[in-house]
Structures are given as structure tokens and as C-alpha cells.
Image 1 (cartoon, protein in one colour):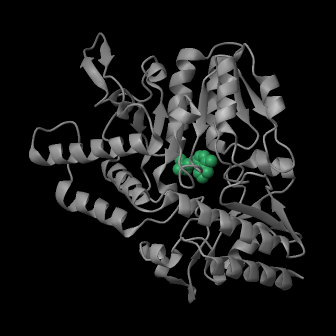
Image 2 (tube, helix red, strand yellow):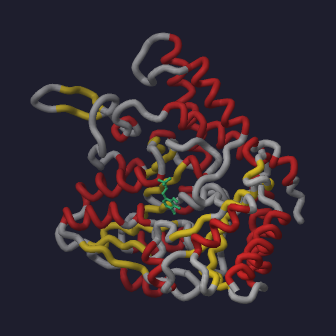
Image 3 (cartoon, helix red, strand yellow):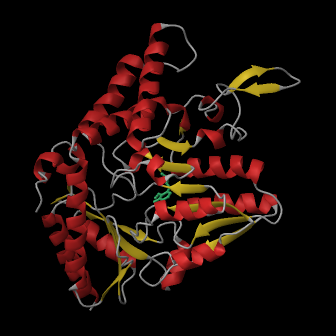
Length: 407
Ligand SMILES: Cc1ncc(COP(=O)(O)O)c(C=O)c1O
């Protein structure tokens, strides 16, 4: 394997040393939520122990300490995704809230009767439904970029779907159900030729490879902290200032105003305009600590290790008769979804759990993908840089056992 010292990295994650059902935990559900390193746990605990207070409100010591830490986390996010300014990085509870924020706010301002919203066939439900609701409200319609049997978007069709009526393209960077990495930079360049902004769901990309929003040139980008080694409740939606400045608030209330009177209220500049109410202070400070952690490791070597694991797991599972891989794109990240003939994925998940192996079984909030592949559900193993080749072997052996049990 590469120069990645996986055993050393594993020691950073306390949860990984547990046993489950008497067996060492093999955690292969990272696409749902990744585990949290000790330094992030400690940072959250320090905040709660020593700094807990509301941000942006008090003049007292604790409030200023909390505000400084919270805004420092925003600076870290800015550098992590290479935004032009920290103000373009809005803290949200996660990707779902990020999509809802942009769909609702952008939709109210820029989408009207007869307009079109372009999404793809491989979207997570959270990048479908908010756009459907906006489309219904605004009299617009959803159009869908199709994919091929490997689970890759058909780029020619994408280009044909773009047109005068297209008001936004909303597409995932990496599919959570297939692992496909989409060519976002090229797709964005094409959309921009039509003057159309691009929203990117980055939930499954930021944990696995460096993302540079200026290089992608996307107009909006969102991700969740809990999939990138941070606590739940943290997350970011990025938007270019030129868009965010023009868009109306999403939620309203405290913290997002400039002035309030019963006749009329005016709003704060970004990012506060989009951060009504008390935010998830501890969680987002934790997100900052997770970014520090990722900066402290060799992220390129981590990505290479994950790739080797994916290739190895793909080979091991493909060698088992009766297994069908779902999602065989040329460019993939970290997700290996499969079905076993005659066995429901939930049964696969339950049997693997008896061996301490955590995978996901279900539709992965991507029912259109299940429909395309004509399956009710799949089993999904998803890797992080702390997973090992031995764990892949345990997965393959356990899957073999499932086949024998059901034979
Ligand atoms: C591609 C993708 N988008 C969006 C989401 C939603 O993220 P969250 O539940 O953290 O809001 C997920 C979660 O699995 C995802 O994988």
C-alpha cells in the first residue's frame, strides 16, 4: 500500500477501538456519517466547558471568546474550500439545510413561470425535493440529466437540456448511492455559457478530496460537517457574493437584521443575513477543528489510500459469484454499492452487523437511482481513510457467508 500509516491514523478515532457483538468494529458507513477524531471531540468539550456563550450578542468575555472561535471556524472553512471571502461561507445545520436555503432564497428571487431547474438522475432526495417545492410554487419545471448504466451522467444530454429557460443547475459532486464523481468544473463552464448558475451538493466530495470552489467556479456549494469528521449540526453553504447579496433571507428573526420596526425591517449583510437565530456554535467550532485535523494529515495520501481500498474492495466483491455492483463509473470515490441475487439488502446489513461490520442498506435517499437500476435497495460499503485492507477482507468474507446462508 501507499505511505499512508493507517494504524497510526486509527488511533486518532476513539470509536474505532470498540467491539460490536464481540467483534472489532468494522465501520464502513462513512458516507452516512464519518467518525470524529479525538481532537475534534476535545475542541467541542473545551467550548462547552470553558467558552459556552451566545455569539455576536454580548460584550462580555465569554460571548467574545465564543464569537472569536465561531468566526475563526468560518475563516478555516473559507481556506478549506478556497472561497474568496469568509462572508461567502454561511453556517447551516448541514447539506439539507444548505439546499433548502439556496432553493428557497434563489427561487423566490430568480425563478418564475415557465422557467426550468436542471437536476440529475443521481441526486440525493435533499437535492430534489427543495427544488420540486420551488418549482411548484413558482410555476417552473424540473428537468433531469439522465445517466448511463455505469451510473455516469450523460453529458451530451446535459448540454441539450440547457437553454434559455434554465435558471439553475443543481447537481451532486459525488453520488452517495453510486460513488460517481461528476465533472463539475466542465459542467459549470458549460452552464455559464448559457448564463446559468450552478449549485453543487458537496456532501460526498469534501470528505474525500480537496475542493476549490473558485477553481470549480460553481456559484453555490454545500456540505455537512458530520460526513467530514465533524459533529452533526455543522455545515456550510457557500455562495458567490454577487448572488448572495441579491438574494432574500431564508429564515428570519434575531441576528440577521440591521434595523427592525413594525413598518419595515432591513437586513444585515452576508453571512448574517442567512444566519437567523442562535447558530450551532459548538458544532461549527468542531467543524473548524475537523478542518485543522484534515490540514494536519497528508490529505492527498489519505485520498490515495481510500482509492486503493475502493479498487481492492471492488475486485474482492466482483470475484464473488451472485454479486452485482451498482455504480461502476470510471471516476468514483469511496462508495461500493451492491446487491446479492435473492437476498434483501437489509438482510445483508443485519448479518454483517453480527460480525461487527457496519454498512448501509436501503435506498440511500436516492429512490430515482433505485428505479433506474430496478432494485428496491442496495447494500453500500463506504470507506474513509481510517479503513484497512483487512476490513475489506472481513467485508468480503462476511458477504460470502451471507450467500452461503441464503443458498
Ligand atoms: C449526496 C448527499 N447530499 C445530501 C445529503 C444530506 O446531508 P445531511 O443529511 O447531512 O443534510 C447526503 C447525506 O447522505 C448526501 O449523501
